[in-house]
Structure formats: structure tokens, C-alpha cells
Length: 403
Ligand SMILES: *Cc1c(COP(=O)(O)O)cnc(C)c1O
Image (cartoon, rainbow, N blue to C red; front, side, top):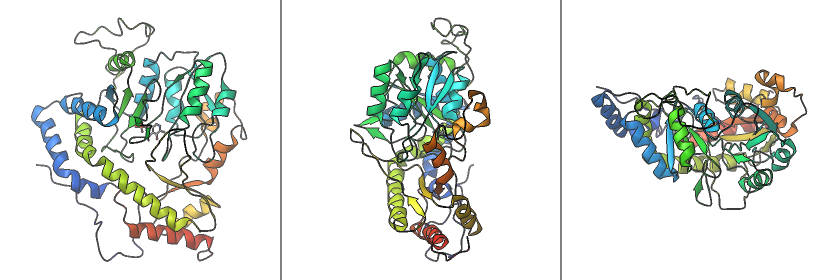
């Protein structure tokens, strides 16, 4: 009934020197996972329930086992997961939540969608995650929470950020959308404060074939509220909207149930997640080895030691370079894909103009936006592709190519 997706050929012995290297594709992995995905997809079709059915329930169970979370609530997207998590934690209009100025827009827009105010802080220039001193400086009497974002390959400095939060009585809510597989002393990302999220957007480390996300928490009250909010505020089988949830009165729920076909895809891929993470580590090491001595490449991914045992999980491979935009153009001309995460710091985004920030307010965030570029990266990338990308980067800076 459904035929396998044709795979990109990963093992081709004759590699065309000029073949394109896309920034991202998951075509080849699907061949391997296909029998498992198909089994789960067939189960969805057999039952005929496509929203919030058995595959979603099974995915929640398997993600709880993988992460160690007491509660996993599957929702429509990572962004929805953040909004519902903030609301379930009791974030209300008038509250301030401190977020990094360098992140995906959802880290801050989720706060605004929860009708609270995002307050920006600068990042550490090496790990690209919240700088605890900048967070401390951003605290006001209205601050309720701080949202560390675990970007690219490693956890934020949760020891120092936790200490700032404790001193000021703030909640810690994690944007762990990129952080599946990252652990702090054995505890999975998202479970180091009140709760966290996962995104299954297709490019993420565990990607679906469309949008999906989840809330992770050990707190039963937060879990119950998310369960209610994601389904129009519905309690059980009768529709008592938000009844019985104190501090959510006047707040409506939404429709952010999860899709069983996406859950089926994720169930088919989850058993291979750790292998994919290991492959990502291998590819990151290969990039680093080849780019180490290239002039113009000013910073390679660096894992900053934390106060506890942590493990990097490479979601993207991102470097800092000179003349970034010219390099991107050079690579594009060679058929090599790149991505700029993130071109505009959040405090200078038009949607946050009303907060009154100016260039120069968060220099490390601004520098990261200007200098970083992510190179092609996904588990199906061949080492020969890494060679080709690194040669093209090297040519650019060694004058082998016009700039
Ligand atoms: C991907 C991502 C999100 C949002 O996830 P979606 O599933 O795309 O809504 C939020 N924060 C960060 C840091 C992300 O990378």
C-alpha cells in the first residue's frame, strides 16, 4: 500500500566531486527505518484514529523511558510545548521570563504567547547559552522564571543558572527543543527544572515528517495542566473547560493534540536514535579535524566543561568565520547548503521592537548572529561530503577562490 521512500545512495563508491551537498536531508535513514515506520503507520490506518490515539500514547511512553521523565505530553510542535509548559507553570500576564537574546524566535515568542513579557539576557560566547551574570542583571521584582536554551550541542550552565534562580526565587523552565539525548549527571535535558520541551521538527535530532513536539516534566501538576490545556481545557470525557485548575481561571485551552502518523514515524526512528547521535559525533569530529587549521575559521564547536558529567549531542555543526556572508555565497555557488542560526538577535526582531532594545545591548548575541554559520549536517552525510565541504571552505580562505 505504501512504498518505501527512495534512498539517497550513501555508499556509492564513485562520488562525483561536484555533486551538491544539501544542508539537510533524511532520505537515506528512511530506508533503514521504513519497515518499523510502516508497521506503526499500518497500525494507525487499521484503527482509523489519527489524532491523539494509540501511537501517540505509545510514543509518550517510549519517550518517558528514553528520557526518564515521569510525564511526557505530546503536542503539535515544540513551540506549542513551550507555550503550554509556561502556562501550566503558572506564568501569567505581567510576569517576566528571562530568555537568551540568541536563540530561535520561539524561545521568546512562547513567553509572549503565554501573555507574559520576555526579558532578554546575553549569552556566553563559547557555549552560545545564557550567561548567568547577564541573567542576574536582568532580574526585576516581576521576574518569575528563567528559560535556559540548550543550543546546538550542549547544555547551558545549569549549575550557575540554577544558583541565580534559587537566589531570586525563580522557576527554571528549559527550552530543550534541540536537546534530546543531552544529560546532566544522568538527568535528561528538560528535567533539570520545572519542565522542558522537545521538538520533532524534521531537521531536529529526532525529526518527524512534519511538526510535532512534547512537554517533559516530573511534576504531576504541570503534567495535568498541559494535558488539559492541549485539548481545549477539557477535563476527562466531559467538557468542563479548565474547571478545577486554580490560577488558570480566565485562561482558555487550545487544540494542540499530537498527530498519530507523526507519532508512528517517531516510533519507527526512536530505536535508532542513539546510533544516529553516535554518527553525528563522528561527523562533528571529522569536521573539526579538517577545519582546525583553516585560516578564517575563527571558532569551532567547543564543549564547555560543566560542574557535572554532561554529554554533547550534535544537533548542528556550527562554526564562527570571517566574512561569513561571502563564504555562504561561495558555498552556495558550489552547491553546498548552509544555514544561519540565527541571523537576527531576538532583542532586535521587529516583533519585539516594543521592548525598546538597540544594537549593542547584547554584544555576544549580536556577534554570534553576525559570525556563525552551520554546515551540512545529518546522520546520512558521507565522510566524502565532509571532505568536499571542508575543501570548499579552505579554498575560500586560502585564496583558492575569489572572495
Ligand atoms: C526548534 C526549536 C523550537 C521550536 O520547535 P518547533 O517544533 O519548530 O515549534 C524552539 N526552540 C528552539 C531552540 C528550537 O531549536
